[in-house]
Length: 171
Image 1: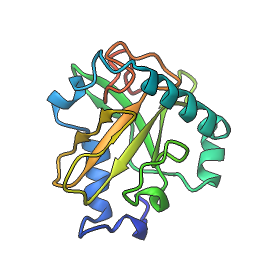
Image 2: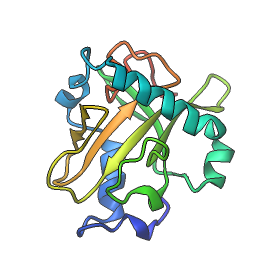
Image 3: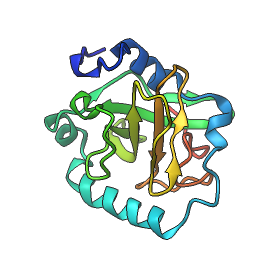
Image 4: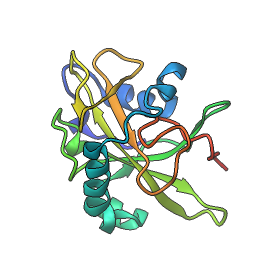
């Protein structure tokens, strides 16, 4: 695991953030964003995210931009997979910027290459869950942790903003 000192916010250490990413969200949270989120604002958010990540689709380019791997591929039986999280610790600052998501989520393909499938907004140390484009973040397993996935390069039958994708599994 990489040590990213910029993750220290309000007493929450990197270990907490890594556990959030590796452990996933509470099972009920996976269904929190099914349907009803395909608004114009949500559509515009996805467009912005695709535009802002078009040069980060290769893991090598993401790493050059400061995104580092935080654990193995995340999967929960019965819910599906998230993928491998690459976190830019400098962006985990409580500011939600659709042009600079805190986490890029890659999924290994059948040849072992990593493909960018989603992004994740991540906050730590906040007392209230933020929202973006009218979509509220999900609470993580630790107080003050909130996240929101956006499946911008991989169709997710559970919804664009669901945490897990039931069509995917880790190798």
